[in-house]
Length: 415
Image 1 (cartoon, rainbow, N blue to C red):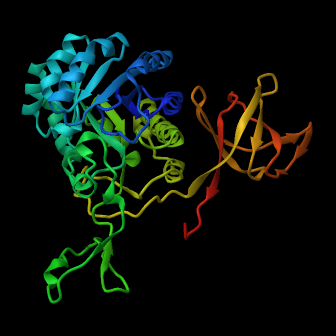
Image 2 (spheres, rainbow, N blue to C red):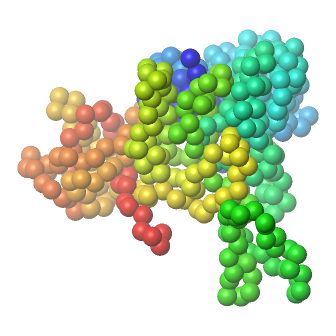
Image 3 (cartoon, rainbow, N blue to C red):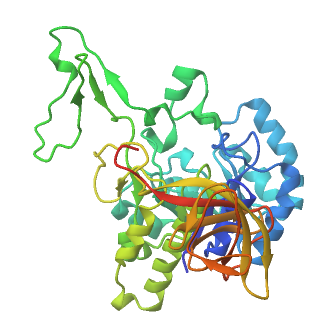
């Protein structure tokens, strides 16, 4: 059966994706992974990550996938014994030089997408070195992935949802060139996501290439100051929810969701949707259908519009900023949860009413999305509550004291 692999940027995200059906989680170790701006985990916290994952029967993969200089490689090698003692299942490596040391400590060696693995010959070499799995290049088509996987002596893994870097397999120097913050060392400031202004010398019209392709969607818009604006550095997010049957038939061992730097509710939502889709296909592949609500739910959380990346064609559509239908507003905190009556007491600092959709998040709770159906103040039912109040809401899932409460507010067109 294919593995659904979900991201965990912190303990709340960890719980959120596990509660929503992740078979495995991947996460970062401080100073050694491609998401330095995520909270990540310390060496001392890895045992707790393992313990929590074991509650759900999930596997754990530690991202150590930055470009390692001599100092970092040596430091990481010395930490392998402690990492192994934490009972983490495996390491995601961008440097093949550490495969042997990783395996010798009883850890699985998974080769990062940063290695740009594009053929079965590389996979055969990685097998000889001791690797168990390789994340295939994001520049491959689904047909190529299927062919490579059929010939591969080790497991293969692919991304199925999330942000896509414009550079080859994420190897980008734009952030370093502009800010001195290296993407290849996990410290990308994502300047590609900004709205860029183009200028060109007078009379030099060759800078703007008007393609002969009939269906041209590379949009450059003129500004009042005579410059041109575009998001050409930034592709749309990958979304493969409509192609689960094709992905399942590829023979790939693991489907990976991108997003360690995104919020716990994002991880919970996306993981839950893909869990449903994969399970539906496995249960009845002949009658499998994509549900309209899946895409509706996926567009409700942070996204920059969706594309299928290189799986079926070369992606050419550019994206704007967040395209989600809602914004998440911090409105309160859990005071207590009453198990007998399945109700939570909330302290709120914004108005709340019946029908509002909220998200409750905490380190043990994970991320729960709930629509308000019943509220009470001092035992009396109410339809709405003003900010500054304590209110009891009916909620079947247990939440905890000091969990954070957010309200989903529909995004205005000008947001």
